[in-house]
Length: 246
Ligand code: UDP
Image (cartoon, protein in one colour):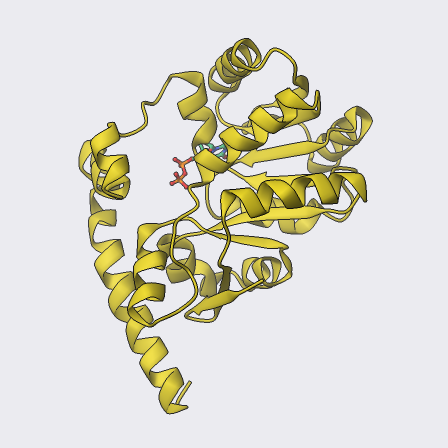
């Protein structure tokens, strides 16, 4: 698998088809797949969380989830040419689970949000088995959550606690979980629940979802600078690396 590196964080050149082909192989061989989003926010902030850096290094599929990653790779003649959006990948995983009657488990989001996400997903994908769902604000202990998931033996586990909680939680628990396919899904349950709308198609088509989300949520307005800052820093990092100074 070809990979690039963004300021020390590995990210893989992948297509949806390749990941879905791997899903069949991993399920058949009972191997663990960790499909983890690598986006500009994670690359910029990951250094603060060494456990996340090492979790990403050990993950099987580090997906280029952000146009900034694709642009930096293209500008430096790297191997990544297209984006894998986390929510799109989750949708494809759900469709796969529906087709092959697989078991899925959800962990994350507010109680009313995850309840609505379960309803909508079950309606849209009637053949997949939702073996359980736990909201991201539960009073259960981490060990209780792990036991509950293991009792249900899901094929897929989607964790949506936002960065850095979901990566930290996965890094602590993947080993002890009896699950094959893991994905960190950020705010995707909010979108599946209908509580949050995805950006209009125009912004998706022009890779401007980050801009729409920053502008439409006052709490995220600061993130508008994240992309240019990320690109500038990554390009500098790559230049220095070429010169051998990092
Ligand atoms: N979330 C959660 N538990 C928490 C904090 C957040 O389940 O303790 C959920 C939140 O409800 C949302 C998702 O994590 O569904 C992403 O949260 P947020 O938008 O804050 O993260 P970001 O998009 O900034 O990574």
